[in-house]
Image 1 (tube, rainbow, N blue to C red):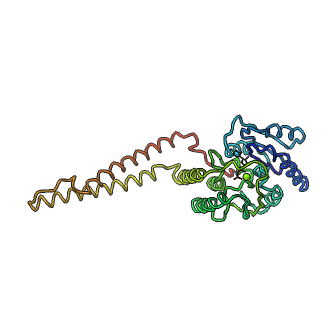
Image 2: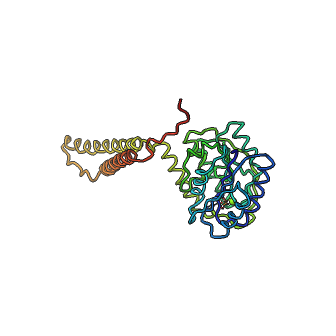
Image 3: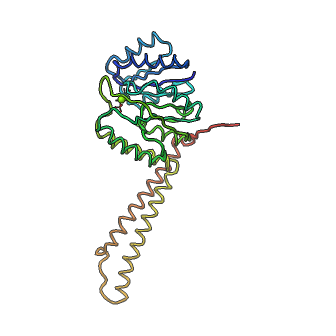
Length: 317
Ligand code: UDP
Ligand code: MG
């Protein structure tokens, strides 16, 4: 099979019939063998009924129905698990992404050799409250992930070589960072294609509000930490702990030294608690010990983690 199209959706009943028709037209025009996997993420409207009807008429259409709303990442995860096509395309269900982009995305994966091609909504039809924070977010993600050529990490329209989706685990709200997940799994030929974007016709965005940015940054931090130190937590905590401990130890020497000098000179020695170095010594040594303990705990946890020897092997002879 050439293409699997994975569509996560939450309350998009009005858009689904036209989306299906449009995809079908593009697939037939280009002679692709394909499947469409609609993942109904606990919709409370008629979305599932619509999917059932479409799949009755069209054998290429499959559906997965969640019992409740879990989020876009879990929906993608389940779609990816089921996908069988050589190239896997994800797109949003709200008709903001155009299926006309699919043939070129497919070509970039199969002929240009990309592992992942992300859409880039250069001209966006979203409110400013969405586009400005997005710019900031992408700049940070580029820096942290080291994928310098991506402008739009969170574009719903993306194409993957099948191995990529089988080797990454999208969870929580990590759909924003799939290129970074792919890179961490060893797929580093990541490209970008400018894609058309349209304003939402039906319903409204499911990702409003500012806390998504706060959470987005925390997720980015977690990914960065996992990738850098996930397998060797002691390296970061041990280093910081040692550093703190050394600073604390120097402060102890200073406190002791002041006392000693006073004694040698025969003047009344000041109380150690009068010296700022005393407090520095105290906090630094406590912090240092705690960081060490955190490191050891991290090591114990990673030693027992299920995926501790889960390496991505490309080929064996
Ligand atoms: N979506 C989902 N589960 C959710 C929220 C959203 O499957 O909990 C789907 C949604 O139906 C759409 C896609 O994710 O197909 C992108 O959502 P949306 O269009 O609201 O995001 P925006 O384009 O505003 O960033
Ligand atoms: Mg949308």
